[in-house]
Image 1 (cartoon, rainbow, N blue to C red):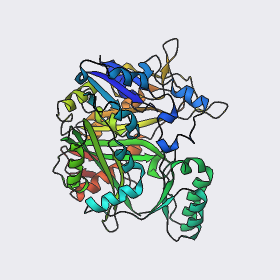
Image 2: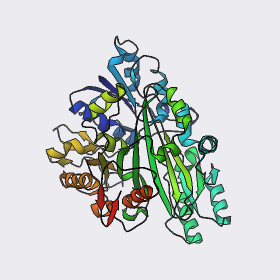
Image 3: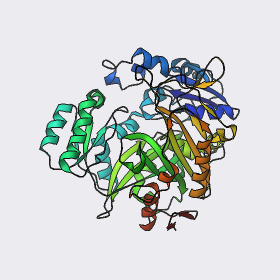
Image 4: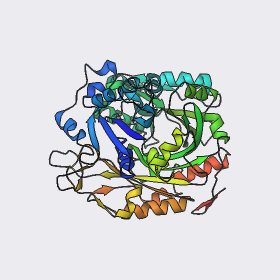
Length: 470
């Protein structure tokens, strides 16, 4: 197949680059104007500064073929063999672009406005869960559009709350303090320091659930046919111990599981199969669940509706032999995974800043050739000398993966790969932290908690520390 990627932020460009390295024909369509990216109601009040736009459009320059998204979409209307093309939309808020090619006969993933609504409209998602998810509770949520209103509410409340922004730039913040006054102070500090990010699309305060265990199963379909289910354990916090600011994903563990496992029956009620049948091409659905260890109650967390997660997409691809193999198998309506495989990933962050406190550009990236298969570069371009250097668009520098037939094997390979990556000022969470049993929300502790409750079975044996997962 020939591959077309439609991007704004460059999230999927590591996948496009891998496909090209594997010998496929790949073209990237860049959305050049932010007004063609944001929701229709935002277009009159959203702008992008010149530096941000200049750097964003340099992502993967001289590495993949870059064109305007509009030009590529227009060219698809005249192709003779549409089934030879796979069009990949990296986020579900690109539904307006997907609408332009949905009926052209090409392969791909085609998010809808409803898919996006499940992710950003917390009330909509909550009502959906109440109607269709019989075994999940929904935590209490307060909606806000103004920071001042939320601060007034926090000053009066006697509960601890979690802050969640609806826009990508509005970070989720979980208080690190159990003391009510101090926890409220942390949330107020976040709101006071980043009011524009939170007011951009509005935000919520969600009642804090103590002793939380988060698990995320995912189900993958093609043309409505279920292909595979996976389990995802993600550490979002920047620092070890999961008590710092949250990132998109700092490290994760993913492996395929049986569709009949108990957690899949909880998280994928019949309505999800019905929705998948209404979607053309690749359809991805996950629903994170939050378990209160004190009473065992399971709460709905959030949907990532019909969009891949990052790092999780890279971690899944690392288990499939090649990126080409993944896409060709799903189009043939076959599972791209093999039961018994394990994938892991860790994100590398660029902590360098220039004199204006922007993420530093033009810093050389180097690595040993043997790690290339597991290296997913992000903030990168090639300069005129053919050297890989940072763009300075984002602090997310790269993701490094590992895969194997046990957690120890996958994690060991991943951190050996990290040792082969050369960059001045890169930060990442350590191997000891990844395998830690010292804090309840660690990946391994959550894995074992789900096993002990019979939520899923492992198609492999794993021994980490003193705990034997069965």
